[in-house]
Structures are given as C-alpha cells and as structure tokens.
Length: 471
Image 1 (cartoon, rainbow, N blue to C red):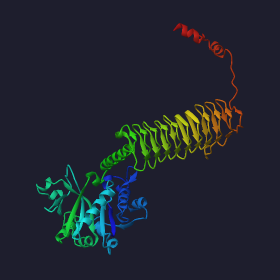
Image 2: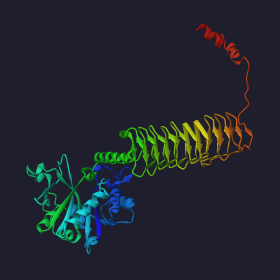
Image 3: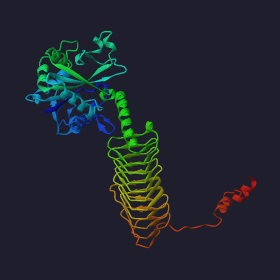
Image 4: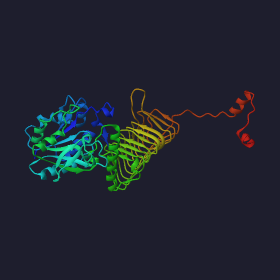
C-alpha cells in the first residue's frame, strides 16, 4: 500500500521566544522534527513532505534532502497547511499520515497501531484518529464516539456541552487518512470562524457526512505531547530522559539517582557500569562495562572503554582506554586518545593529545597538542607550552620519561626514551634518550643574609626558633 506523510512545521514558534524554530530545539540530543521523521521512517513511511514557513532553512538543515518540502507562505490554519501538500498527494491511492512537527514523543509503534487499525477497519473507513485519555482534558478537543465505537465528531473544548466536558478522550492532531478522500475533504473546508482559518478537524465532519466511517486508536497521553514553549520543552525532555534511563537500567546499568542524570538517546552503556548523580552523557557517547562515571561528570561524543573511572570531570570528543582513572576535576578536551591504564588526576587538562598506556599525570598538569608515549610520569605543575602567541605545536614525549614537578616543556621539543627532566626546569631543546635535562639557573645560598639585612635596618633579628620559644 502507498503510504506517505504530511508533517506540519510552518509555525512561527512565537511562544518559544527564540530565534530558532521550535521544531529544531533538541530533546535528548535530537531535534524535535528529527524525532518525528525517524518515527515515520521506522514505521515504514519513507515518502514524507514537510509544510514549512519562513524558518524553513533551519528545518532543511536538520532533515536534509531525503524528504520533500512545501512552503506555506501565509499561516491560515492546519487545514490550509495540509492543503499545500495537494500536489504531493494527487494521484496516490493509499494512506496519508498527518502529524504536527512539534511532537517529539510520537513513536513508530503508535503510528503502526493506527495503520493496523486502518487495515482492519474496512474499505468504508476514511480516517483513523490517534487519540489519548487525559486526566485533565481542559483545552483539548473531545472525541465523541457512537454506540459502534466509531467517531461521530471532534468537539473543541469551548464548544463542549456539560456532558461532553466529561469526556477524557482527546484529539492528538495526528491522523491517518485515505488519501483520495483527504484531498476531497480539503477542497470543501471553509474558514467560517472567528479566526478566519481553515481547520483540519473539519475534514472529519465532512467525511462522516459523506457516509464514511472514522475510527480512533488510543495511545499513551505522553506520546501526544507537543512543544509550544520552553516549559513544555522541559516537560517533554524529562519524560524522554526517564524512558532512556529506564532502558539502560533494564539493560544492567546502575543509575544511582535518575532525577539528576541526563542521557541522550544515542548513548550506549555496558552492563554493570555505575552512573553516579549529576552525570550527563551526550551525543553518540559509548561507555564500556564495569565503569564508574560521576559524580558531576559530563561526557560528550566520546568513547570510554571497560573498567574506567571518571570522577567529576569533562570529556569531549575523545577516546579513553580500559582501566583508566580520570579526575577529579579533569578536562579532556576534543581530539584526545588516551590508552589503557592511564591516570589523569586532579586538575589536569589534556587537549588534542595522544597519551600512551600506563602514563600518569596525577595533578595540576596541562598537556596540549602532544604525543606522549608509555609509562610517562608528569610531575605536579608540568606544562607543555604549546602556543607561541600565533601558532600551536606540541611536544613529543617518548616512553618511560620522568618529568619532575613544576617543569615547562616548550613546543616541538622531543624528550627521548627513558630520559629524566629535573624538577623546576624549562626545557627548550631536545633531551636525548637516557639523559637528564636540566633547564634552571644554579641555586645560590647567601649565609646570614637575613640577619645582616636586619642589622642594616637597625632591627633586632629574632630567629624563628626564638619566636617559637616565646610563644
């Protein structure tokens, strides 16, 4: 059967108070409109047309050219929006799915349920409405059914009788139509209302008046939620995040505090990994098994291998090996490759560097644009000086190098295998293998300098030991 979709995405998003179209705002790492498109693709609907408005460039950037677009120049209601797709629908003899573009919660299962209901309804069925039961249906159009269970009408909240206000089943604005009948009804809707707009819901009464049946399938209310402002965006994100967390927990991931943990839809996590409170996992991040992530850690578009611990740190667009220890308060910036058994400790920043296995930088260190071998020790306060004010270049630190504390390794220097760098050195030249590099001035001690200084000032010098005895 020929199945296509019309998605309404031409709204101006005024209630979002944003320069961005509401349908390109993200929910769990994916734009709202992409959630809708993916649900349709997963339900087997490949041919999709999007009704777009003045913010169409933003939508095209998200969806690309695998779908069709039709411009609605003037906002004249949902019926007028779908009517813009008439050239896309003409000549088709199957079904048309109509969805709002601002409903990221809609699922392929819900769409599939509606398509199946259409198949079972018979040839005299013109449409299936996707509905939901709301605890508080205030503001929603009510679904009125006849004794046979078919829909006899959609009544807007303001037009409901006292009896109809008791109805909990609401219209989700999601439909499946028989395509030729949809086109016929669209050509007959009017704008005889206070807003002067053409409403898609009028097609339902037209089709019923033509003698056709209209059915309905009830889905989870959360699947129908739309986004019109930032409050609703936050509500939808919370629901989607809860579903994602539940999926991981059922797959053997321990999430200590779901209330403070945020995980994007594409993230993969191995079993027996523990996610501590305050953790955010973003993008296409992959976490291995038996890891401990958090507290208060953010990992974005990165890979973390098995048995690694990351504590109170940030990792972005990088790869971290097996059995590593990262943090607390470390920052792994983009384009880093950290091999197995590496320790990146407290207040360490790594940027654009490769770090060999068993290397240790336990505290207060910066490694930038450098290639670091195996079993290297970075003493506290070590800095690779990778920026000369104009260009950036890294250092090469070969295997088994020991760098003493408070050392500066100036860009492009090569520290040879098994070499040592004396603490407090500034190294500006290569250090050969098995050599000791010292880059500091010679220490000079001046005996009795403090007492002589005090005498010249006419002060009575009191030794530290004497001060302690007086206390």
